Length: 350
Image (cartoon, rainbow, N blue to C red):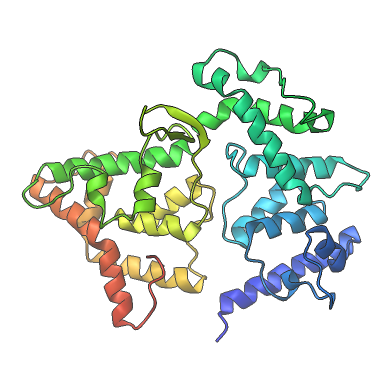
């Protein structure tokens, strides 16, 4: 049985495409050729059903010569994926450059979408070239002259070189705000557990295996103020970029594992560039209902969150109450799985 919300989204998406065809004069078959997805029957799949890949929405937007603002709206509303973020050198910075270059190139003779890998290689080479200046603070990165080997990357790449240079000093703070939220959350939970070591094994991030999977622990470890991988031997930032999880569902799963409920999860998702949990979505509607029911029967954890994360000094909790609140928070995901199981529903946030 087709989800009503899915049907509505597809109808809305088709209306958007029909409007753009009318306004721009660009046909669906031309869009399909532009993104490299032309079909022999001339019936593009992105019109028959919602595209699954983030890059497909970006490519369709570029084919219709749409600005970043429009494409970002598609990504959050239709794709339920993260907005394009200039501080994400692993992917988004190059997309933002190509979208703007496509808009400014009135000739329409260059397919900027299909040149992504090529420009990504240049962007990363620029980053590597200037890593010492960034990490050691030897230069004002806004004024850095790009002296990359001209034989390999000639003048046709000057635009992307300059674009990367302009954003270099912002990389160190990429995702710092949501990561800082998670760091604060973890430190508080671990601190409470340490107060009662006889009742829990939790004393550090690594000791939370079983509540958090390996990928979550890897993401949460290290310095939240940098996007660079920490070298395990030296403890120093390496030139490698620490890739952030791309799945919205993965982030929701991690939040649930940490005991976050609706308002907490929405706050984190918005910091990461995602839309909040959507009641009209079939899966997320079920999750919202389950979270509301759980929250109403676990009032202590909300008092704990308001005290420690919202700064409500009027709240007073004993050490035992604080531990019970944290115990409930860490039990949240298992509780939800059990609720879904009793209703014979699939719990997808695992």
